[in-house]
Length: 329
Image 1 (cartoon, rainbow, N blue to C red):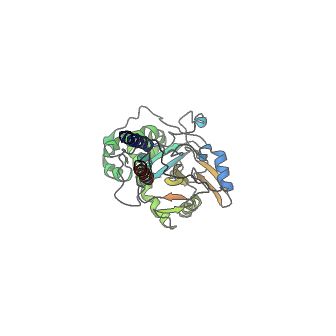
Image 2 (cartoon, helix red, strand yellow):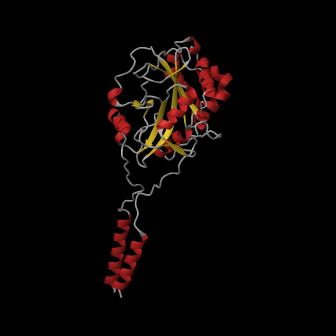
Image 3 (cartoon, helix red, strand yellow):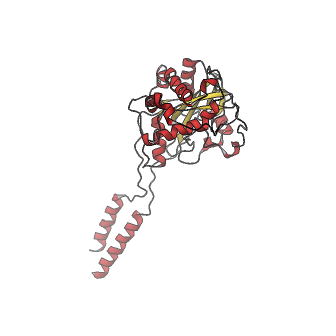
């Protein structure tokens, strides 16, 4: 009898070991037949073919995650051709941060369908930058007091109020000091105020809504591009975050371009991050989104994925107990 009890305890111990050593798979791999445009995009941009859970990193700044092989192609002086005005979709930004770090806090705007400003980036066509053009032009938060309330609403740091000033300082030092080469943006207040003006003139939620593109919908990047071109008459640059683990593309940023005279122009020739220009029969699209896949425009930050790493089916435990009962009779 004692030997049977020892055997039972030994088997139960093995079960506990099995419970902690059997992996669980939360997702299944899926593959879609690529269109010729998607093959063209993947050929030109190797980051389109797989990699990390979020293979297309959402950089906190515009070119912090450049491909290693492209870092040489930076502006060597402070000259630039266009201004890139970037609006970000906060839900996608927060989702990416939280998936990278479940403890990361994120302050979403209270209003729904509310795009926020990421930055104004002076850029040389077909190159990256310039950046940090004038080290002597230090950031002075008191200069922004006349517009600070509007900045907190339309140009917030989504990581929270405590980091708000850090974001504005970063954008001014890295990009504003280059934009100040033109009179219209030659000081801190002018630079940030211009962002607020453009945010009011080009409300991205209204532009997309006019073409029946709403949050919590799935659309092709071509449809998103056509909606913007229809409203503005100029080509934008559209950016996605691709969640490789769940095979979902999320709309993250929409960028529109301006000349040195602050006139709206096409973003053709703009080289930003991992975006490439794709030519198709109806025109061309500058994007890092997967051309052959739907892009999700989320209305809410998706729930955290299940974090359990292991499982042992309860039905197997039940069968084992039945066997032990039979064995010890």
